[in-house]
Image 1: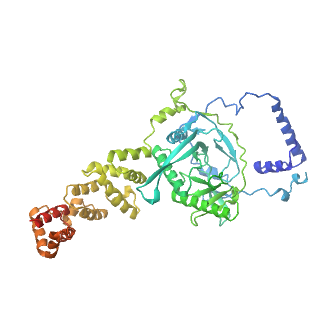
Image 2: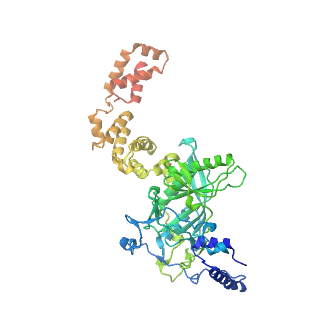
Image 3: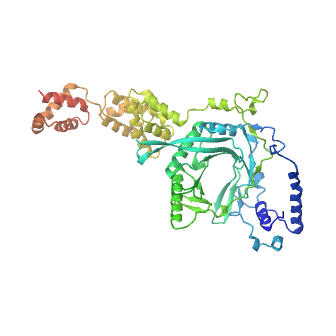
Length: 108
Length: 448
């Protein structure tokens, strides 16, 4: 099953990845094919696994303050700041629509 | 790592809302991009939350009359633990968003309700009761103005018998009053839109409290694909009860549902029932008592210090004290009249040393908070009831002597005129006579 342009565009928006060129898309296609091997295993009656930690139980920490007061350290990461606030654009800047983008996907 | 206190609070709240507590609950990642979510995902409980299938009972006044209350229930779909995002402040003038990450990652408890409510009033009453419950449990101080309790309202309309319509989600509601307004506005907006042939978009809208309306939030258009996946770093959350208690586990790691259940405090509904039973007050009185922070305690303190029956005391608390506090926007804690002062005053009234009219005058003086006791004010303003029977008799006789026409009317059978004579005696005594006693004396004299 081939990966359609719509799916690729959807993925690019959701995960902000850029498949860049034909080689990138082909790599994606091959990765999906590789993962498809999972279907060869018979999993009837077997519960899906969440993670290798799933048989443990979650550690609970006490309600004690152990760190903090590092405003200056954290704000050093800010490109722009206003009175201890990080500055961000007014909203999410969406990727332009497929037709308007300069992307390999257009040509495929 | 999950904070134990969050788990305890969620279990307490789940139990208080009659939920089934899931002994094993799981964590998931919900992915989306936003400036206040630095990691690009929020840890939440989408597949198996900590508590499910509960209910919340709340009361409404019919027709705005406190005397008629009806009980309603809203089903609780689930309670889930999740992470908070940071806080965004929108600066439209400079076209930017300011982000405060202080609360990012802090534990949140989300309570999801089923669509069992039908108007703003019901939503407000339900949330108010939830607020009281959370405060009683100590799960949260639930002050909406400070973001300790946040409410998003999902609203849809449909004709009776038809399936539910498309819903919109309304955010940015900062008080219980605004919640009612936002819900009612949105219901109206949807009805008007549908009646002129339009459609409702499944979108997120923001409530504008200044304009009293909801507006579309451009940023959150369209259906989001959150790409939910199990949170790989957090194993399942396991809770125990007395039967399943493990022998060898460190007790810091054990949350015992039964242990928590045994220690639940009295919920608001139970407290109200106890007040009604213990003091013989009406259910609607108990609602008002619990609705004002500190009022129940004030009431109980007054009852302790006075011989006056609670049924009479409640009138003074709800009609006099509370209306004064409201007029001056004071909380019970800020009251210039303490429970001791009020009890003192009510004792004077109960012992018939003053009339109830005089008591109200004394109360008005006490509001000034000048530090005088009720007794001092009574003496100052000469408000004591005349205790000397002879003096009263003389005054009554004088009034009778001066009102020939009225006396004739009464003797002829017109009993109502007696009230006029009582009134005249009151005037003569400057309100310092006991009307019941005066009536008795007048009647005795008139029948001689």
